[in-house]
Length: 459
Image (tube, rainbow, N blue to C red; front, side, top):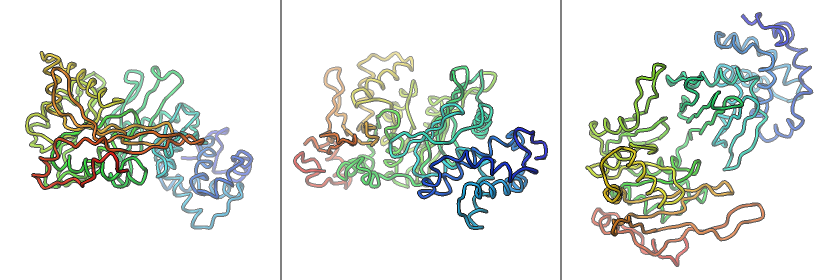
């Protein structure tokens, strides 16, 4: 099988040693410094770059794992020797095995998917791959051989979840087997070639307590949100792209009683609910004939027939907002969702516009009354200029005054200064306002600390 490799891609059966030695000068000049930090990760990156120039990648689709192992073993050995990297027999064998697995998986980006310090992988055509670590973007040395190589990986991703991407459907949302969220755009909408964005699935779901370690939130704020969830207050998490909305939604859901039945609705399933009684629903795009589409609004209507205690929508984007509010107002208190908005008041305006998209004969005042009745708490998240993610505001809806929805802020984040390195210095403070649901929560046995809302006490 591998004898079909063409010259120019190198017949690896006859020339592995010569080829690996010839490739040695191409190894990045700082490889040895990188190896001191993370030997296998950087070596895999270099090894992938070495292999993709030499293999007929199309043959990998029909090759078995054992065949790939047999072919790449001498190449890996000679590459490591040429790069002057000291690995013992066990490490060399592990590197060979990992490389074979990656070639059968998602190729060059597999090492990045296994790196827990990376939150996002951003592929800008086959030539450049960026990652985000701790809120900061950095370019990697990873590349694909050509556009066809990248498209082969893309098609493997989308086909696994029964979707497709081509000229007739050039944009698609999908997910990896581990739950990582994937967005793809190809020609003609992506002018220079495929663009792929991967939001990695955290193997260790973040709790609100763990977010304290990253200074994203403070304990009194956590206590308020915990009591709000236990008291079945409906929560809207608002924020921009990459501000941590889904992470926060996951963390909030951990406070829901395991005795409740939850139904989740998402475009691409990524929520990690820990309760034993969870039903997961996912939208579906239309097929080649333009039929078979299942939208969030249809899933929401169906969810109401599934006897949920709470409904959790990954993100409201359109007309389904009307059905979400209806659910919250008709016995499904404590439901949660996220929305793209830069401030709590903006979130209400966007929600109002979305309800209008449902085509109902409701006046603006009626829509606002529905929102004020359905939503109890808005949690605003933000990704700051230093890459840090913060819960910058927690507000409570207190009803209507005339035709205006009333908001009162309970906690907020105050920026104080910026260091020379660009790190934002700030603090979380209470506004001095006590939430109106505090009395109701006390009846249920949930009590706030005495100084929880004292603006003079540092959080």
